[in-house]
Image 1 (cartoon, rainbow, N blue to C red):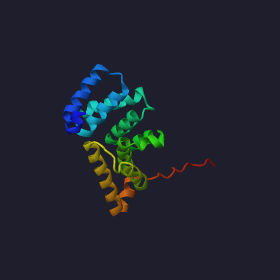
Image 2: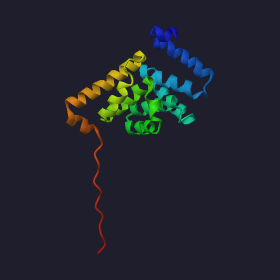
Image 3: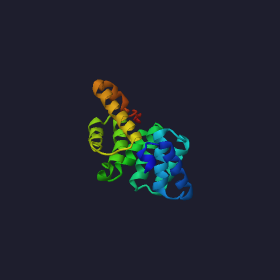
Image 4: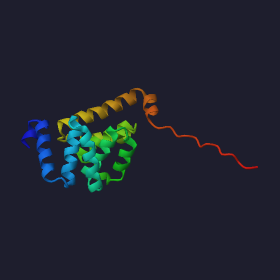
Length: 169
C-alpha cells in the first residue's frame, strides 16, 4: 500500500514480481503483475505472456480476463480482447479499475457511447495513476472520433461483400 500511496509503481512491480515468484500458480497475482507491467511498460513481453497464463488458468475471473483482453488490444488484437470482455458479467466490468480497460478497448473499436458509459463508471472513483493515463487515452480517442467521425468509421472493419460463385449451367 505504501508504494501505491507514494505512486512508486516500479517498486510495486518488484514486490508483485516477488509475490508471483513465490505463488506462480495464483492467477489473480499473475494478472496483477501482467497488468502493471503493461501499464508501466516494464517487461512487456513477459507481461503479455503472464496475462495469457492468468487467463488460461482462470478465464472467468474478471481481473484475469480484463488483463488478457488489454494485452490482446496492445498486441493489435482489439476485437479478440473485446470478445473476452463481452463474455463477462456486465456489472463486474463497471468496477472502476476494470471499467478503465473496457472503456479503452471500446474507444479503440469506435464504440463511443459504450465507452462513455464505462468512463462514467470511473467518475469520483479512486483509480491508480497508470489507469488514469489509460483513461485519458480512451477520452482522447473519443474526442478524436467525435471531432472527425469519418476517422472513427475508418477504424472499424468494413464488411466484405461475398465473393460471387459460379453457378453451373
